[in-house]
Amino acid sequence: MLLGLFHFDNPGLDAVKYTPRDVMQPAEQAYLVGLAERIARFAPTKVVLEYPAERDAAINQRYVDFRAGRLELPRNEIYQLGFRVAGLAGHPRVYGFDVDAPPFEAALWSYLPQDPKAEKRLMDMIAAESARLQEIHRTLPLGRSSR
Image (cartoon, rainbow, N blue to C red):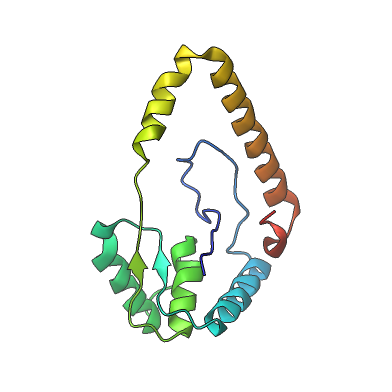
């Protein structure tokens, strides 16, 4: 199973910009605990999270600390959902996977100024998606915010 999520602690690095809902609120925490339990019942064989390979030792030390009750989970989805699922599934560790922007992405951003119409269409799409996601995070509960 592959599960995609919004960044719970959005660093604002993506082209689409919005303020995510506060997943640290009691209702959101209750939802995340229940979601982690439901995913763990799926019996994943590995939990793979979005982080670069060079952070593997640090992330897994945090996971060990979490399992030992020494870590209060930060806002990030790695911890809020990933650690919970892995812990409930009894996994000794988590795994990281991250991909830098593909080469075509850099080529796209450098090309766009040469084609103002294409650049405007893309910027309009990004603005529309930013507004759509902002409205979803502002108005829908966490369990419904994936539309």
